[in-house]
Amino acid sequence: MGSRRGAATERRRTKPAVIGSVAAVVVAGAGFGAYAVYGGGADGDDTARTKSAAAAEKVKSGPLTTAEVTSTAQRFLTAWQQGDVAAAAAATDDAEAAEALLTGYAKDARIKDATFTPGTPAGEKVPFSVKATVAYEKAAEPLAYDSALTVVRREGDGEPRVDWHAAVVHPELRDGDKLVTGKAGDPPVKALDRNGAEITAAKYPSLGTVLDGLRDKYGKKSGGTPGVELRVVRGEAAGDGKGSKESGADEVADKTLLELSKGTPGTLKTTLDPALQTAAEKQVDGKKGASVVLLRASTGEVLAVANGGHGFNTAFLGSLAPGSTMKVITASMLLEKDLASVNEKHPCPKYFEYGGWKFQNDDKFEIKDGTFKASFARSCNTAFISQAPELKDDDLTRQAKEVFGLSMNNWSVGVSTFDGRVPVQSKAQMAASLIGQGGVRMNPLNMASVSATVKSGSFHQPYLVAPSVDGRALATASRTMSGETLGALRELMSYTAAYGTAAEAMAGVSGDVGAKTGSAEVDGQEKPNGWFTAYRGDLAAAGVVQQGGHGGDTAGPMVAALLKAGG
Image 1 (cartoon, rainbow, N blue to C red):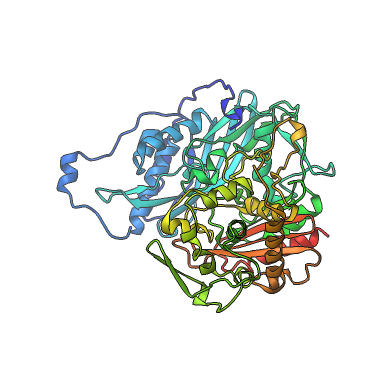
Image 2: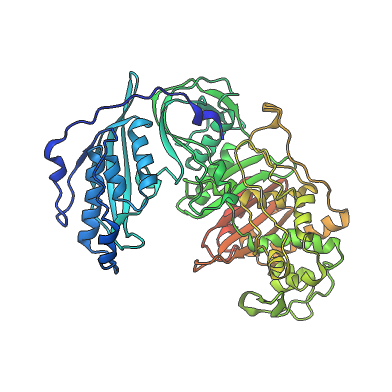
């Protein structure tokens, strides 16, 4: 992470104010009033019962009542508004974590005179709005935002408590993060597109997280001076809410929430194309689970990146099973090992068992006496799984690293990225990896790079900021595919774009094109994630729609539209 976390600030204590009878405004079950919150950390009365009393009392269970939800929320908010941090923390199911963050709300974030206005409870969830003042030395600015808390039964005794997460304090916080007000360690950055026009989150909503990342990487290098601001400082546990460091979560940039005094921004040029970025924003608009990336295949320049959900840069940091788009890499390996040939017969049975698992195709189809080209175009799983007995455990991992530059954790794009994961696996898990399941993880940036490698003939690490800006070295792959393998792979992708599962989405995309669809099953989801990767001329793109279904129907139209927009 950048040094914005380490900004030195002078801490001042604020004496808790006397609020009088405000704490008694709310009565359980009667609704909520407004609360005024003042900084401070006065010791409070811990209402925890003695162990003997708790043991003698029957453990509470069953759905929470309206009265329990209302009174628990009242207890938490009333204590917090009084500056009684210990009592507020005791009303949660993680008192230690709650007390630390609530103490920092006044001490580190310098937030004072806050007023909570709860909304109408919805089941166990209680929304509330916050109006406050952030003050640092002579600077002060109003702060307003919405948050929410959820009431749950505490493990062990079933008592109702606030389900503690950092997002209760502010929705931009992830567990492990904190709020800090002070002189920013990193100056602001004025990011420019490839034509020299300024990039703003107001113009391109998808780029908010990208701009945060650029500041984190280049704030000090771009020549600006820092201002004073309230910001989210990311902690070790910060992430995408799924608890996986593989997602690049530990690399999420700090985020500015409020400027008290403006710094002087430095200037930083990016590779983004304004017309293509506008097109990408349009494609993901209103699609929360959609992400897309467009590259120049011959150089690796990122021309556009967009996410339908703006809180996390899934396009660069996502860690998702890529489904059958992974078959591009697998096919290159099978072709190299003479385990497949484009126009020769290749098995595509309804089922294939390996490592104790029984694999099948979508709708249990089979292709009798079909070629490998037909199996690739129709995305036959068993055509790939059937070759697992001929492979070593590390074959796919080596192919991904050596040819496609993936799974090495060494890309230097200009902002933090997750560079794909293709672990060495055995038996059934290895077989599942061949079709983009198992332990394989990718994001649209990775899969756009895969299509770019096929189109250009060699791996060019994607980048958002030119390496000449800071003299950094880009990642490289150790080898390229033979001309014969490359030509065969292009033929497979071209045929799929014209006659296979990608044909409908790619209809009307003219020129030298190739594509591959994918869908990835995810535990707990009714629909799979839909994937699509393709190239046209010197452009390569990939996209995913989470819980979208088949990639050709969901991610495909997004990717095709971007390739068309590229001319």
